[in-house]
Image 1: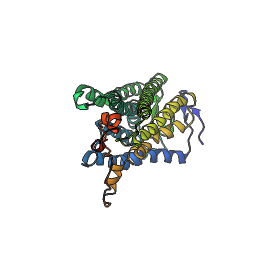
Image 2: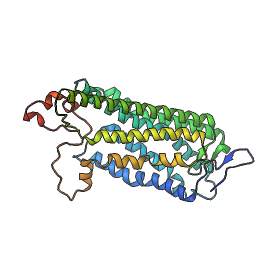
Image 3: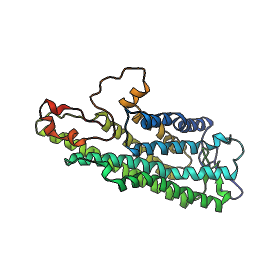
Image 4: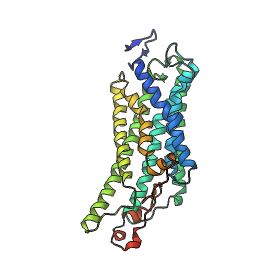
Length: 325
């Protein structure tokens, strides 16, 4: 395992102490989702008539793909080990990767926020029509890339002004720029977004729980016309945001540990496992199998008013029509 040393300029080298096996693991966790898993998932969402997802879901897929390709730049140049990469290549990768703490958490927050809007509207007995919020939708879709661009330009500016502070060896897995104000700002922004995401997830689960409680107290059978595993997927993703936020703070207190980089690199794989195993997506992947009749279609847009309306549960047989998710 590498030990932290200093150059003649006083800059730290190998402040992250990792092994060759951990380097391989880091590259695999970044490359297989971005080069294979996510493009397949994205292709299914975009081109299959049986699968419908909100654009914020597509945005998060793209964000993870950008992150994976940015993490792989040194692989393309065969500079993951050995001599330092060129300053230009190293600064390019550092700039792109320093933008991902803004890109991916913001895209994830927008996906959770869109889900929250659906659930909240249903809780208050209203129908949610996303197409009526045109400006808000565009802001939600564009904001991750605006934040990404700002962070990329800021990193490139700092790195170009201090080329000796750009190095691969500092972070072991990838190129970085030695600038405490820059890294602290990015970490703080990421932590705030992840905390906001966690709050929205908890709020969503509270609304779902309250609806179930109200229905049960009225002596009605809580009939779900929405996919029951959807809340479980939200909870799983919420647990990850908490872990990721904790590890972001850990990377400040214990910069020598490779754990934060490895666990954050696992995000894309977790995303594929959590959201890529939904029934409609699996049915497209297993195209040779005859699709089974589904009680619930797993689209992102939901008529959650019906899904949470207890009066529908007490109604007649005709009220038992499934609602698409």
